Structure formats: C-alpha cells, structure tokens
Amino acid sequence: MADAETGLSARQQRAVADLSCDELTAALHPTFAGDAGVVLTTGLAASPGAASGLVAVGSEAALDLASAGSTVILVATETTPADVAAMGMSAGILTARGGLASHAAVVARGWGIPAVCDAREITVEADSFVIGDRRIANGTPISIDGSTGEVTLGDREIAGSAVGAAGVGPSPGSALPAEIDEVLGWADRVAAGRFAVLANADTAADAATARALGAQGIGLCRTEHMFLEPDRLEVVQHVVLRGHDEHVDDLAAAQRADFRELLAAMDALPVTVRLLDAPMHEFLAGADPDDAAQWHEHNPMLGVRGVRLGLLRPELYAAQVEALAGAVADRRVVGGDPRVEIMVPLVSTADELAAAVDAVRSAWAGADAGDAPPIGTMIETPRACLIAGQLATGVSFASFGTNDLTQMVFGFSRDDTAAQVIAPYVAGGLLDTDPFASLDRAGVGELLSTAMNRGRAANPGLRAGICGEHGGDPASIEFAVLAGLNYVSCSPYRVPAARLAVAQALLAASV
Image (cartoon, rainbow, N blue to C red):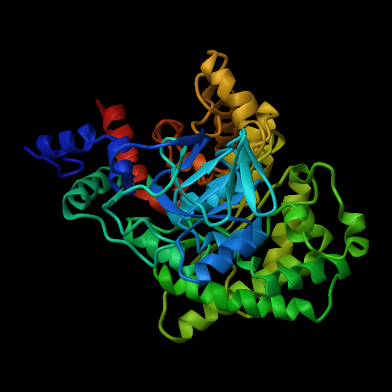
C-alpha cells in the first residue's frame, strides 16, 4: 500500500532508507584496483576519488605537462584562485597545507576530482617535493586516493566510476546509472515541497553537472571565482586599488557574459548569486606591492571581505548587480526563464546590510530590468546569528555559511588546523569529529538554531538554508532538516548523496 503523502510503497521507502550515503558517494567516484604499493605519506582525504599522474609542482609545471599531453597531479603548499587554471587541467591535487574547507578541497569537490590536503610530511620546493630523505621530482608518477588520504609512488590501476571518468577539471554534465537514479527519484518524492537540495556552482559547466545530478537550482554562485583568469584578476585589482575607472565597465561586461551562460544552464531553476566575497590576499596576489600596501592584512580571512569590500568599493557591487540584470534581460530576449536571487555576504550589523540592500536595489533599478529580485544575506559570523531578528526584517532569505561560521566559533583556521590540531583531537577523543566535515551541533548548531528562531520571529516567511560544505554531509543535513531549514546547497558531486540524506532524515522524523 502506497504512503498517502509520498505515493511510495513500503518497499520503495525501505530502499531509500537502506541505501548508504557512503556507498552512493563511493559509487560516483573512481577507486584504485589492487595493492597500494609504496605509500609515501597520508594526508587529509579532502575530495573523494582516485587519480594517477605525473608530479607537477606549481601551476606553471602543471600547465606545461598537461599541454604536452601528460596526466598530472598538481602539487602545492596550498592553492589560491590564481591556480585554478592549472587545477582544471589536473587529474588530482596534493597540498601540504589546508583543511576540508580550504581552497583546494572546495574546488576539487566542486569539480569531482580527488584531492589530498594537509599532507604535513611534505616539503614543497621549486620543482620537487621532499618526504623524509626521499625527493620526488617533477615528472615522477604518483597516485593519490582522495577517499583515504594515501599518496603512493607510481601509477595504479583505476577502477571505473558510475559518473563520468576519473576526469580532468569540471565535467560538462553527468548522468546517473538507472538503478541509482530510480532510488533517488523516490527520495525526491519524499522531499518534494518540504526540503530542497541546491548546488554550489560558479560556471555554466558546474551548473550543467549539478543539474544532471539532480540539483534543484544553485544556492551559492561564488562570483569571485569568475575572476580567476589573469586578465580578469587584473581588472579587479585595478578597481580595488584605484576605485572607479574604466575597468569597472570591463568587469561588468565579463560578468554579464558569465551570468548569461550560467542562467542558460539553469533555465527555470533558481540561481542565488553571492556578491563578491574573497579575502584581499586572494585578489591582490601579484599586484604591485606599493599599490597594495594599504590593503595588506595580517589576518585576511577576518579583514576586508564581503559586504565590507562592497561598501568601501561600491563600484564593485554595482557593476556585479548591473551585469546580472543585463544577463537576465538577455535571457528573456531569447525566451529564457531566468530566476535569480542576490545574496550579501559576511554581514555583521543591520546597518551595513541595509546599506548594501539599498545599493543593490539602486543598481538594479538603474539597469532598467524590471522589479528587483529577492535579496538575502549570508550568515557567517556569530554576531549575525545573534542579531538575526534585526537582519531578517530587511531580506527574503538567509543562507548559513558554515565554513566561516565554524572557523569563527571555534577559533580554528579552516586552512591550518586540520593535521596539527583537529586530527590529534579527534584521535584523542577531545573532538567527536572534524567540525569542518560535520556540523558541530553543540556550538555552531546552537547558534544556527538561535538565528532561525530569532529570524523567523521577526520574519515568519524567512527562507533559510546551509551553503557551506556541511550542506553535503549526511549528519549535518539531518540537523538542517530537524532545525526547520528549507534547503542545503553543496558541491555538484555531493548532490546525489544530499538528496538521499534529506529523504532519510525526513523518513526517520516521520516514524
């Protein structure tokens, strides 16, 4: 007999409940066949999957080897936005620093390529890396297992994956095997109208992959990732360092084209665009030191970021909003159905949010693109959680950036503490799990619940979700469902497991 609410039979509900999220994730990524061979080191399993390739220390070596037809493993102390081109041509990534929320880990998970991070035994040099008394030079074949953290010497045989191949860079779209797709279709029926799974996607290729894997829209488009090519990075540097000049028009034109492609890939589905939010050291890397001196920061993750940059350099946010409005107009002209929302990041006071919202609405009105879209805020600071009632009155939705929120609540650097602090704490029983991998319910979760209660008391119709990396973790998803959130947004390749986890949490809650 079918369930009255979902239309699923008891057998179908059991199939949804019994499928393991871990098994599903493993099925979607390549694995190694056979023995490991010589293990060089073990780091943090930052992005699942398996890859073999030639060592390429730094972006230049990776680009050179990949252009010559070689499969490469990019090796770096840590990656930055300037490395994205090389990351996109690599089969896997190995870094000596960086946790689960580091740049390398987040980009790798978004593209579905394996990554091992925070391999502290590695010392990265100019054209090699050193482990103990062993030097591994550029061009040496190695293998990395992003599911276990193992790094081994030499090539290893790779078993197939259910989705695509052990790819290089982001896939333009992927289809699930029929058996998995059927069970996930049942899971979607459980969640329909109750909870949504969205994707963190920044390009049309990311969006196509996310849509093919079942995402119901984009919950986080990180617009700073659209400025990673050298010519575009130079445009942002000009605007930040010199204020309003002719480069603002270049910025808007580049973003308009990107937004147009993104909206085409997600036609008729919601796309939440987060305005620029990246630490200054990422934007100003390589800029003239004399020009950038006034923007130098000792702790850039807590410096001029997000809404602060938008209010200090209003030309940036205005250009982004105008570009988005133009892209919406372009899509409508050709019969598209663009559905956009705009999100203001890193808010800590009601006044700065109000100023940013006014600026967004003014820029949109100036673009003559019809009514302004819904505007929301990203809650990433403890203060924002505590004043959520004040923030909620001026916005339509709130999205919890749990990567930064976890960093600020614990005082743990999201890039530097994984191996030195978190791993020994977990091993010694001082922490149950890595709080960047699974949401800390006692601290971060309590703040999130407080924000939900205060936000909805002030604005009963407030939509809310999680768009940090916790949005793809089953235990964190269970918390989000029980806490009354409306959605989670995660990396494209984590969407299938998130769909399953949402349905399982809803089924368990209804028992």
